[in-house]
Image (cartoon, rainbow over all chains, first blue to last red; front, side, top):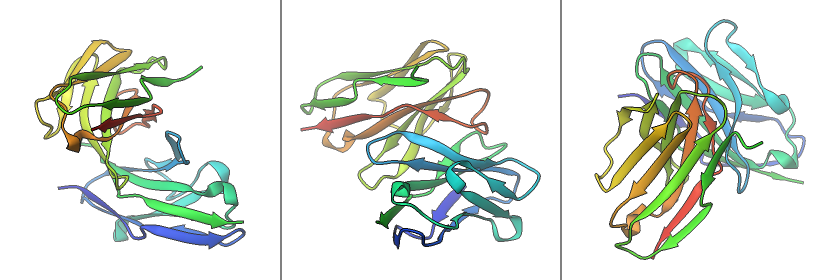
Length: 113
Length: 113
């Protein structure tokens, strides 16, 4: 069965620090990959997505992610975080033939001003 | 203009009661979903409808019954509420199957006392 694993449950950073959130999935076929963000008290919003092509994808608010097929990974990065990036981050995977979006357990990011 | 809206935002009720949550999307999408987010922030799909037809029905107690009167609406009715039903319920929509980007509603926080 498909599964998605996010390495970190809670990450605490100071402003201007660099961020990398790990995401690994288990599925051998073609996948679409997503990172969603949930700001405190708000709904989920799409940060970025990968369907095909360049494995380095850029999203909103300076976020990017790299798809490494051989490692079944889709890690999220940002060179310099801001206090406003404090939120819950979810990696999600959809096997193109599977029909369901499977979410990781989420990573809570706290950025100290 | 709210793309995906849910009502109510908060729902507090006693065990054993029956309640409904409504969802509407104005994006013109043909697929809608219900997700449950538990106290640990884990998101799991419950149901998916495409053009008013049920296409995903996860292992959910039959006390939960979704209804889609038209493509723009997907309601969730819950009978005989239990303490374990307390969670945040998110509605989402997408165009085509779930491998496309999903747009989420603001969530309904259900508390069963």
